[in-house]
Every structure is written in C-alpha cells, then in structure tokens.
Length: 416
Image (tube, rainbow, N blue to C red; front, side, top):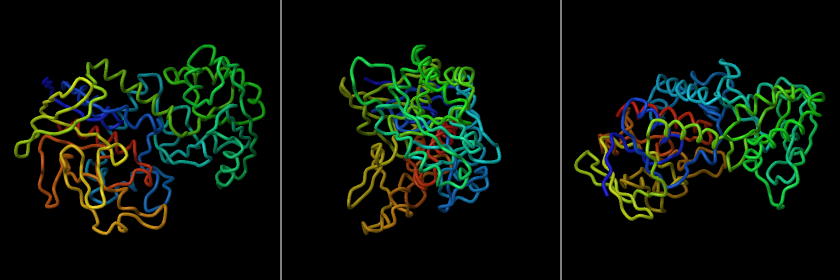
C-alpha cells in the first residue's frame, strides 16, 4: 500500500509531534509514522532550554549561554529566532488548552524540585511546577502518597535542605492516605493523577491538603494534579486549599510529559494529522540526494510512504534512532555512518558526569537540518533530522532536551 503526503514525520516524541503540528499549521498535509509512544512518556512538561553549560548551572536566562555554544550544537544551527518562535508557539498551544506555561522570572531559569530532592533549572513551566514559590517559602511541607515506592518525603526534604537557596526553610513531611481501593497494589503518580482527574479524586486531594495549608507556605507534591484536567485541578486547589502547590518532577511514567503529549495529540487530531502507530520504518528508497519513499513494517505487513519532505525524529541510542556496535555507529533508517572513536575507551570517560562522546553522538546536519557526510556535503535534500537524533549536544547534562526538540521541530517544519 502506498501513502503520500506533503510531509512524513517518523517518530512521535516531542520533536516529531511538534514538527508535524507546525507543518500542519502551515497548511501542509502531514502523516506521522511511529513505533511507540515517544519520549514524552518518560519526561516532564517543563521546557528546559539550557540549564547547564561547561558544567555550571545557568541561573540567569539562557540566551547569553546559548550564544557561546559550539557551531555544531543544534541551537547554533537553528538560531535564537527559531528557539524563541518555538517556545512562543508551544506556549500559545498550552494556553489554548487551559494549561499555560510561563516564566517565574523572565530574567532567570526556574529551579524545580524533583522526586529525589534535587533542584532542576528549567525555563518554561506549568503552574504546577513554578518552583519560585518553594524558594520563597520558610515553611515547606513535602507530601507523599501512602503506597508510593518512588517518593519518600523524608528523603526529599533532607536533600532539599542541602541547597543554599533553602537553608532558611523548615521542613515537615506527610504521607497522604488514598481512599480504600478494591485491590491493593503499588501506586504510581500516574495512577493518582488519573484519579484526581475525577470529581471524587479532586475532592480527596483538596480534603487531604487543606489541614496543612495553615502550617506551610508551600505544599510540595508528587505530580498527581491530573492528566487531562491539570489546569482546572490547579485552579481548584488554589481556591480550596489557599496555599501554593508545587509538583515535583518524577521518574517514569512521566505525568507531566503525558499531559503535554495529550495537548499535542488533540491539536494534531484537530488539524487532521494522521498518526500511524506500531509501525517500524525498515528501509528507505533513495535516488541521488532525494529520499523517494520509506517502507514500514507492522501488523498489517509492509507499507510504502512517499512525501515531498521527510522529518526524522526517531531519537538517539535508547530510542532506536541510532545504532552503535563495538566497531561502528549508524543512523538506523538510512544507515548514515556516524563518526566514532576507534578506541572504545575514548567513547566515554571514567568520571560519571564527564564529557562522554557517546552522549553527544548523532547525525551531523547543516542549517536546514539536512544530513551531511564527513566532507560536509548534503546526503539528502528532502530529509530533515530533529531532536535527539542530532549530534553535537548532550541533552541530559545540559538540561536542554525539550528545548532542542521544539526548536529543531519548529525549524524543520519551516524548511518544508
């Protein structure tokens, strides 16, 4: 079977979904082919633009540090205009959905607490993750949920006390008790967030938090304030509890990321974008510097996709977009060879938080995000790579994952 469109996007992580959305907004016919749910299922809804550079935390706005990045960094390739435009676009989309993103301070990154008691620098945050109310507090309540294995309030409080920004704060902890469940099992933040989406669950959360509002300046919770209705949940908490609430960033399943994915998917559906799921691209048909088609394999057999432009958002090593063996490294669809140190020991450093080569490995591209070879020549004129498939940056160390995903997705959509 053959399917044709103006733009074919491979991958449904943040870069792929956003590139598809922006292209559709520009009047293009768009189809997404994806193997799984994408990385939003394991990341938050805070948009980290650049949290660290040269190992130093960036407390101020990230723009000056971005200007100092290496030429091959994705931010350097797309430019500040694309970064700002992408952030404006995703902010407008979330505001339209009733879950606005904002800066706590337009001159600074926001420090957001995590479920293990660290403070992460982020740029755009939903109302539930505005960490500045935590930094301004003198009385902090850290709340967990009875039955959670991955959130221990005492540990979070102990870790947060290490930060100079919180040295004047006093901490208290509590485990909230869920209503009796028909079956006993281990709960995750996602389970509770889905419960809080219901009137019964929201009433339980308000009732559970209200007694602590008079003894704390801020209530710090796991990310349990709803999935589909997180905006209205936060508004209700503000009215009923009368104390600022800050959600911690958590380990997967990522409640914040799933909230953002739901917003993107609803908008894509409204724009008529077709998403083909459970399909793996197994090969490409090419002629010269053009990709003629991509072939997928799924439960219904093989399917051939053609498009004027193709956006590849298949992720890095963990996402399957890049393959690495002891002797070589390649991009997974086109077999593009990636530069790789011959000596295996040179691909990483002994220091855990060192400058590891494998974390920056990816497809090399030009300013149009088209792949280039070792000599700098373009390999395919109608193929654009976005997100973690790109080389030249380390999203985990930099805290730049969603920023790069949205900036490159926006830039690629404007190249098609």
